[in-house]
Structure formats: C-alpha cells, structure tokens
Length: 331
Picture 1 (cartoon, rainbow, N blue to C red):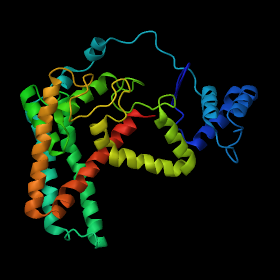
Picture 2 (picture 1 turned 90 degrees about the vertical axis):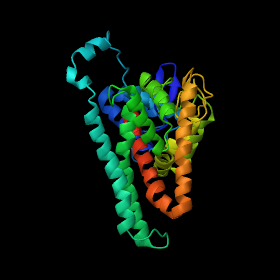
Picture 3 (picture 1 turned 45 degrees about the horizontal axis):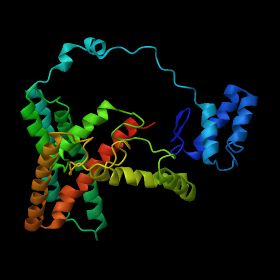
Picture 4 (picture 1 turned 30 degrees about the horizontal axis):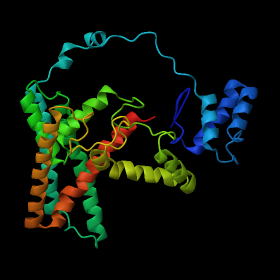
C-alpha cells in the first residue's frame, strides 16, 4: 500500500493484471473522457492484452480513478446498544460445556499420534510411501490440534468460563504445549482487537507502505523481477511457514509506532506495560518446560519420533492459524 495526502492506497499487493482489468472496467463506468485520462496516466493500460507494466505512479493514479471515497456514517451505535440486542444466553459461559469442547479436542489430538505410530510405516525420508503417510498424518493432526489452539484462544479472551483462574490455567497449559507464550500473546492479541484493521496502530496485518523505509520498495522490486505468480508463492511461504514464529520473535506486521517487539522478552513498554512484564516471564517458563520435555522425549525415543509426531503437525497448526487470520484481516 501507499500512503498519500488523500489517504491509503493498497497498490503494493494488487496483482498487475487485476489492476489492468479494473482500469478497463473504469472506462465503461466513468465515460471515455475520464477513463481515457486514467488509462493514459496509468501507462497506457486501455486493454489488458499487451499492456505495458505499470509503474508505482501508474498504479496509484489508476486506483484513484477506480476507488470511490469512503463515506463515514454520521453516527455509530453505542456499544451498549449493540450489546443490548444480543440475547442474554449468548453471554453465558458454562464451565461444563467448555470443558466438553476442550476434552473432545484434547482426546482427538492425543489419540491420533498414538494410532499413527502404531499403524503407519516407520518414518523414513528415503521411502516415498512413508513420507506421504506421515505428511498425511501431520496435516490432520495439525488440523485437529488447531482445536486446542482455539480453546486456549478463548481462554485468553475470558470466554471459556466465569472463573478466571481456571481458564487462564487451561489456556496456559494448552498454548504452552503448542509453544505459544500464553500471557504474552493474550496481551498482544487484546491490543490487536482494540485496533483491528487500523492502518497504523494495529498489532497484526498492518500494511506496509512505500513511504516507510526500504522494505516496501524491496518487495515491489522483487514483484517486478520474479513476476506475480512466483511472488505469490514467496508470500505464501513467508506467511504460512515463517509468519508465526517471526511475529512472536520480532513483532512482524505489527504497528510501526510500537516498533520491534518480542513475545519472550518484555522489553517493549508500549506492548507489555507494568505487570505484563512478569506475565511474559511466566509464559517463558511454560515454553521452557515444554521444550525441555521435547528434548527429553527425543533422548528417550529418538528425534525422528519427535519430528514425525510433533514438529510436522506443529507446522500445519501454525499454517492454519496464519491462513485464517490472513484471510480475515486483509482485502
């Protein structure tokens, strides 16, 4: 995206041919005169076939012609009015019902690896059949474990039950088991919800601009160099494979105003003020215990078993987390 005097224009991630198609549609919507000017300004993109590559200025001018200004409503309903029309039973948090969901997810998450180790061929990268079987297992185990991830997420939102100690205890255990620092992420996620889709103060999925440093320009140059399809593959890998750990370690896609952040080191006062620093350290203890458990498991049973049963599914769980939040928070 690019920030201009007239607002934000999301041009860095728009596919080149989609932009050309939109400019073509402008011709029929706003008339030949203004559309012709838009096409000329955008680098002679009057037709998608044979059109020349658009430069940054061309993309911006074309989108100015296509996008209509966002009209802000004169008034918004108060939060109390919104909450007032929601049935009261929707605010109830029955512990037994929540525990039933938790145990269902937990049972499936623990049962599948037991069955896989018993019935699948021994893990071996030299056997195509073994690789296929264990990737199949990892996909489904990671998908099922996402249920435990979401249960812990609900605990962090104070949506699991009325007892804060019970839900924080459950959330802490489940998230730690998935190498998520529970309290650290609880805090950053609350900040995220308080500024959801804010273009400068959001905690995740904040769009980069060409005006802010070299990163945006570097990505545009990479896009022009390798092409749209290859750039999409790079983007998918960066988000779905690297995205989650990189966010936890560096605060990637967070607010530029808050700068660098690390969910394991409470050095960012804007993100982890006051008592939250101690909670970050408590989260670290949970992660250290789980890593120590994985290390001991590998010593006893071998690293192959740990990679097959835990590490590969862990990657798929992270993939789902990034995929559905990426779709939710981007246009």
